[in-house]
Length: 159
Image (cartoon, rainbow, N blue to C red; front, side):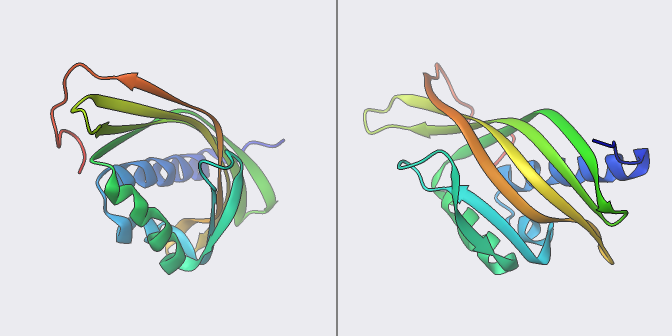
């Protein structure tokens, strides 16, 4: 694979970081704007499958799909690796982004749990008049684990 030019890499890295930050901040309109008008988000059909299988199209579809995150009191998306490769033209690139997505919640017993999704996003990016945008994002889950949390500063760093 051929690496993307440094200026494109910086812009793509910023795009990926903004996605994580906007999801954690519950700014779903801003998340949707990171996609092209015809952008596609493919998510797993949990708990049946960890593989991406449910397709959401367009900015409205992306916004609607991510509305489910509003039911989780707090999330932290930790990006742990990014690889960007040149695509078939200067205006299309591809990327693989490794992430540990923490989902903090309080169970019925009052116990605080961190459900950690170990995942990779497989992305296609397109340069538009608005800058680089996500044309397609597939969420590939490797595993989900649950961890007890000793204490929690509700609202710290997120919604």
